[in-house]
Image (tube, rainbow, N blue to C red; front, top):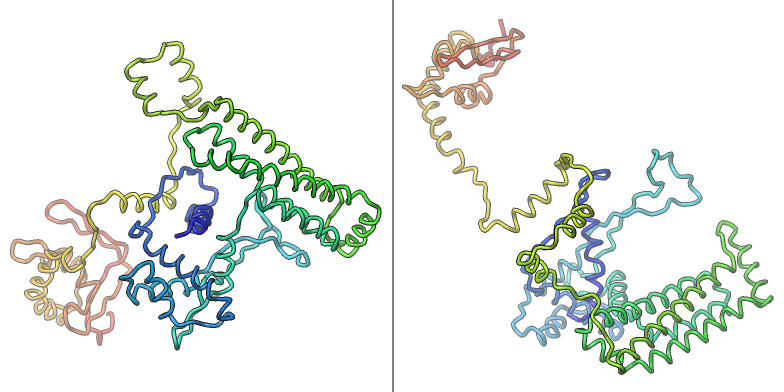
Length: 469
């Protein structure tokens, strides 16, 4: 799997976890445990899917968006996996061509007034989409091609956010101002700002973690290119800011705003977006210069690498002073202790995942063997008691208290109270057209061992053709 796909997955995996979360809104239980994902955990199926999407994107232009047979895809993927079977490819194709519905929230349409919401709630409305399948597959032939979602995913995965290429994005700001597309200016500036801040973070990480030798070497080798790119971006944005101050552009901007009365726009919005990028460029240039000076003079120091396991062992061998311990306890211990009981619904999913992750055996419920002894007792009870019970009911209807008093719940020396109650619940067990009537009178029966059986209604067995007397 290419690094572009891995970056895309790493950036969006937890968003999918939020979508699939069963956490109840308003729940005070906010702790999240580290989750282990299901599957083989070897990356095989994911790598096949990414290779397939890359190949479909590669042939999409040559095929002019037409469907291609799976045999071509199989031949291409066998260059990476020679033992790949057609069934494995078919599974990947079926999974990627089957849509999955996603639910999200969107702002309400401006032309429709939002419904009256409760206090503290949001006016954003729920929406969903099923356009999530990256592959389209013909049912008759099985041929495949990239869908619109697949092209978008491949584009996002291959997107480069590097300062070395952002100088071309800065030229887009001037083009947007010349064409009167003022709404695009903040978006373009945001893209440039993301790239600049990304490199700033890399410079800071290298200063704090000198063990990142590969990144340190890359910054050292390309520092001239970075300085040149930053200078080009800065010059282009200064030209754009100067153009914002011209009367001709101000007139065009006012005319553009008049055509959008529902949107709040001001030239200060565009100027502020450009100013943020210029400030970030100055910050990055200063950090990059400091890093190069430290590299030249050998003054890079580790500021963020702390071996906490070694520190814990040292504390065990050499306890800190009493004054230090009291200060640490005062800042780390809770102000008050109280019991906290989480809600059951969020805990069930967490408990299930923990049990699946830690259990070494597979839990299987087998209804054929779980109540084997009770089933045998019921079979013996019906074999011995079914015919006499039918004869007794034929003479007169039999209520549950009467059946217990007459001893029908005993089979030799073994109690079959549950089996007798089953005969009142499932009348087909006795093999005759019986039905159960419920009398409004309550009943209380005391067994020989002191147990009480009571109920608000009295069930009575009689034949179906009889009417309650």
